[in-house]
Length: 267
Image 1: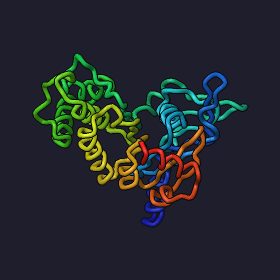
Image 2: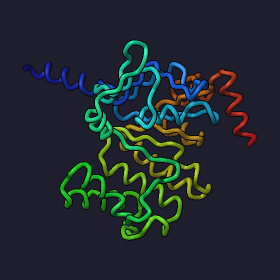
Image 3: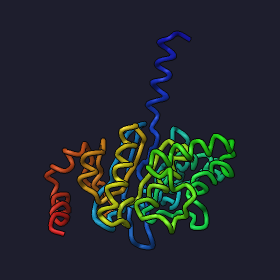
Image 4: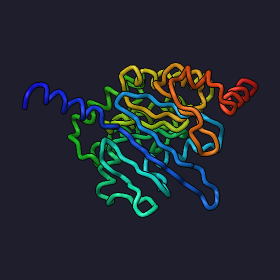
């Protein structure tokens, strides 16, 4: 194989989307909450999803991370299919295949979801050792490095209840990163925090963006979405209404978008 052929092959590999969702629909009883949503995310992209409560943002994230099943649509990670449309409805891959796919992503919840009876260090090291079966020495070294990155080196032996909300959320981010995901999802990562603690968490996410971590972030922090994102999706009533570069979205003439921003300013 020539050098040119090798480079072309490498380019094709890098161009495979890290995440691809096509024509996703999801209903709860008679309420359709996702209406024909498609999303493609490439390596190193930071995508922010904004919109009013009830617009479908968190449901989209939960479908992407296999916490909810889609009624219709396709889902794949790095070209590996998690779900495909067959005969008008979604068919999921075998459990063993889904287990492999789940190792492609990490998820940070708004309420931290740390194990309360584990120390900070054990919260970071438990899954890499027992689920991923990685060598203990390497896992502990990586965990210490992550805690240093989060400014929490002195908190390794603490328990979650001994930490502030901002510190707990930084531990949750470190725990997700400890699994070496290709994609990191955040579901309103600062909504449970006081304003003064929000900044320290957003600073960590901004740092990850600068390191070209691929991230999808559901957020109500508009200034953050504008400054850190490569693309912003504005959702309303189950649709992606506006999508594009941050400045294009925030200066969009779309009536629903401007109404949403106006309500935020007045709140």
